Image (cartoon, rainbow, N blue to C red; front, top):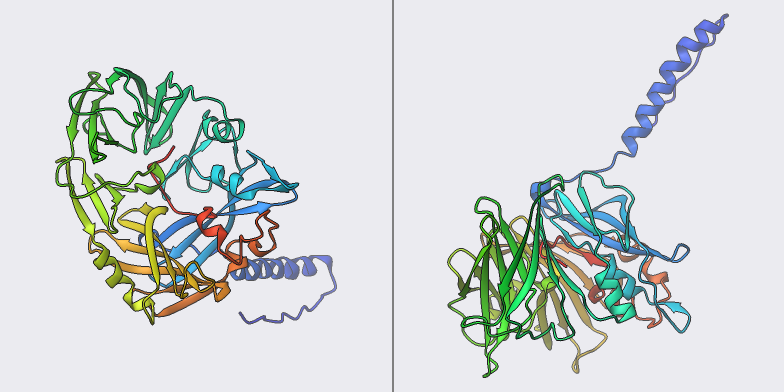
Length: 435
């Protein structure tokens, strides 16, 4: 931006000076404001995400809002700290184990667009921006891992809802209890409680033969006043089954349905690897590929096979990797996009020091890759944004995106060089299904 030099001519009186200086100050202000205006990408063509920056001085985590502009092929940073997280702090060899703090820095649930759910136990709001932020008194996660107490409650979150299971004992991972005691709380878009319903639900019956009673995914359907809960259990032959429990919050009834169309095994999965797009749950498949569970007709089908995903990746690798893996864990979902978390090793004997990490944004309407965010162990100092054909569109310095990550003295010493920040979740995409 060009700087214009303004010449002042001072007259005889104080009034003339005032008339000249005031317009001059206005012009300078406009100049500065124009130069430092924050770029805001289009919501329709960008994917928001959080990056977590360890603050060694304050011993907390700062959550920054960023945008992956898939139309222009670049990363836009807002420099806004939405919230901080200061618990739990764990030390190893007198050094902070940042990976533990990052694990609990994640929101309980957020859609990347309108709302973020946080815990009053370990989150503190700094700049809510345009998000509706709802604070929940949910200390379970931090206490469970750090203090190792037995579970009294299980919580789960989804858009506009919180589910709480009460009186959960140490055998919660596989329950044969006749009933579970659940409370469903529904909120409006402003975070106000509008429905609270206590329901006893059968956990061991002709359809559901015991399992993780709190469920792997939740979807609240406002028009029907119903919650669809996705559950997974394994039978005596170690075969996996998906079930959907439909809970009607108006009359307090529920119904179990088994999901049809599944072939082969079902991997064990947590809520952080089941993104929700529309009325569908997206899940990992055992032998590679991504599947869909449709909550309306209780049917399962493969969304992208392993061969489909390899084809999408073919333009990004000049030679086939010696090892390739991918998962929805550590990815997320936003509007019509799911984000796949990919690892590709090019060494002769994996794991090696020659590998790539990618986030791939996939349009669920077309099954096409729209963009990738790539990190290369041979060039660890940069992230690269590429288009669907593997063409490099822009780059951003790793230390800028992750705000000094190379200087973080983690007790493992591997956060930066070995991309430990990737699997530890320093980059967090929207994820409605949480808790």
